Length: 206
Image 1 (cartoon, rainbow, N blue to C red):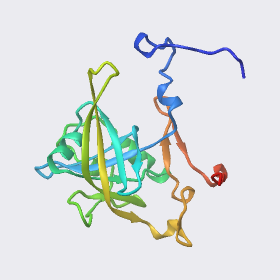
Image 2: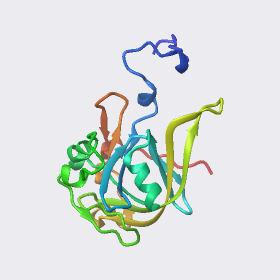
Image 3: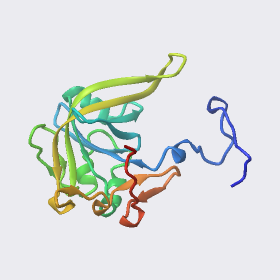
Image 4: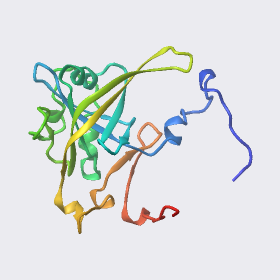
């Protein structure tokens, strides 16, 4: 690999055909978030800024760039679900990316089934093999290093219920590759799939 380095200051622009930031911080797990507005309307949308942040209690979070329907719904109800986006569900997940009015039900748009949750009033995606039922813990509007507010919000939720297809539990151990999760890459249409041949193991130092 060449020792030459491309350096840029984001505030001044990168000068490249495509912003490399998302590609460098990736591939990223997908926050496929279902929510319900206070008037009962359902929403389902994928977010590429998503991850887990705590073990006990389990806390996950995603960032909404712009005040989108998911943010408004979760502010109103304090609940949401996360659903695992998998290779068989990739096309349906992509359909839920569509920029549609709030009254459009993305479950119906993508041909997916809303399945009642046990502890929250928001449905999960029945076709997804893994879902988390979540209760809102924090909403944080992001800000720059200079303290200026950014048009993005970090939504954090405590996982209060977990649904796992038993086929993904082998001797009680969850099999990541067996679930065929997909992850977001950096290009406009780039995704990656986790497969068993990508696995390597490395024990922590004692």
